[in-house]
Image 1 (cartoon, helix red, strand yellow):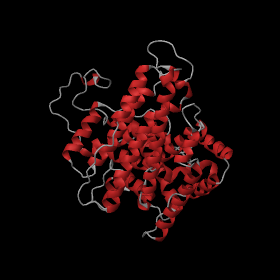
Image 2 (cartoon, helix red, strand yellow):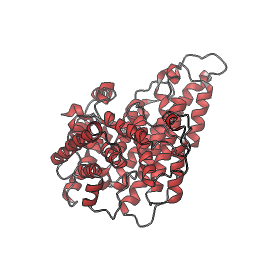
Image 3 (cartoon, rainbow, N blue to C red):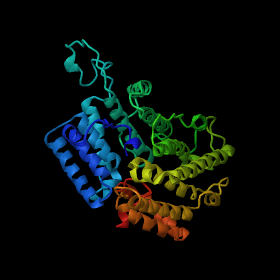
Image 4 (cartoon, rainbow, N blue to C red):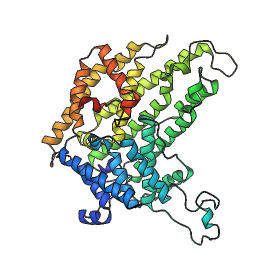
Length: 435
């Protein structure tokens, strides 16, 4: 699991007893996520973790790096313990708050003395520079990455914004190469940095008021799309074959999620009204449909590529994936369903099915999850399996694979309802309704 989440590092020289003594909640989070042989026991560990965190944070008022690492790991595999009562978004705000409490989100050497919280120290002079550790830089970037994925694929949350100091952390980790995983970490974060730029440019409150696309926005979208390209990634030496095949695929999944985030603006009918716009700063009416169809085509291409990448992942990786990767998969499937609903003269919804047939996709996804569970239980030692809700999900996917178009559409519509999304860790996998 660690190679998929390089933001929290357990030194290889540490023994379990040392980790349990030095970072007890990180140890408990790792035990919880790793207890895949017995999912009932895994849920017991998950409940104990919540109780211990509540005592540490709310009763004893603790705040430290080890506690933050434990919470972040626990939240990163949120699908493992969702049966306890899904508190994903509430839990997600805990690392946001603790990063701020610890001051890890700020450059300690460039704070203005008149900034909030610094006025009390006006009379004190700083004699030595403060240097952040690699561990502190990684955890900050991990909190940003997880929050950014959530904003991109799940729902709008008040997450950390990418800052110049985060950029500095990326540069420091990339250049120092303190660990071979740091280069992979930086590539993940850089992709989400671009996702945040897209959100600021095209998914603000202002865009919600558009009833035709302004020319400058259309040009910016087109320019941004052309500038997107997968970030180069060089494998470190001496990595396992699983890591060798998995990391490039995960990075490409994030890249295609980024493209979806940009191009899915074309799914919004009100932004691309067919009525003739007026004013010199408005995109010509004759170009609306063509430009929109190009974006929809890009959406479909990225969706197809992302789904193919998921099916290429080794079963060991599927068993270990953090919820963010499941969320990217669910986001792509939800986008696919929306692409088939678009009504515009230059877009044929039948083309969507010719590229990715939803019924075949549901059938294939159910089979893949079932194969992964069988592989984990019969091939690996100790045995491993996906969390219990995935067994129910397999049955639900098989139902969708044989459903009529009307039934399928009703099911997909349920996945997008706000009250349902609030209670599940990712849009498509509406596991709550399966129990």
